[in-house]
Image (cartoon, rainbow, N blue to C red; front, side):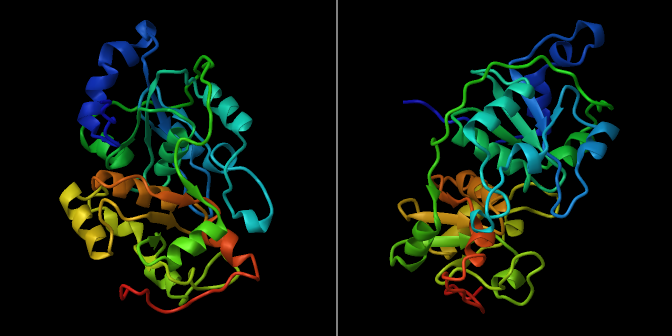
Length: 298
């Protein structure tokens, strides 16, 4: 029986895995089988490249979420549809990834953007992908070294194949939300779910039958993921147990990946992710919209 690698890694464990001599010993630097990706991104910008160049984990390569972790399509495809398999493979090779590498991804927003890279790499068939718990702040707080400027890395040779993780389209999301034994989680802030505010999508509200579960509530004040038992209790209160069919969505498919990460940390199976999410749903005038609290009371 194959044991799944843990989805999170601490700053201390990453430091040990990388090895000071193997990754950042100046002229003696050699290729490690661990690859580190900096996925700093915020909705509405600015891009995280400038922050990356001001300081990052030594050896980390910057990943642009908008252009490398998302594709382009019609409004009904959502704001962050998946890139094509060919485009993603080209990007992953540009980051220096090769088959068999272990990958660590991080950001500075409690993993909510890094989780998109985690999910997409897993979906592409990379088996060992971990999110740095607490992100770049945790790395710095631990007193670890920081590097400035861009990292030049030799191209990798990775081969990717989408389909390793379950996904939902709009019809699948609608069916799951209305199923008596299933749960469709909405990872957005509660006020967006209830339709009180909507800063980016055309119609405020949520998919009828969905359950509000803001993914920001999966992390503590220190920016680290809550303990597994705490997360398991949270999801159990939302009606989710080990055999419950679960789907997740958010505004555009980014923070939904963080909700999926939290479910895995809680010891639950990977949920199906509605990639188009609410941005796709709300752009389709044929799709109904609900407002107010969820069936769990929000």
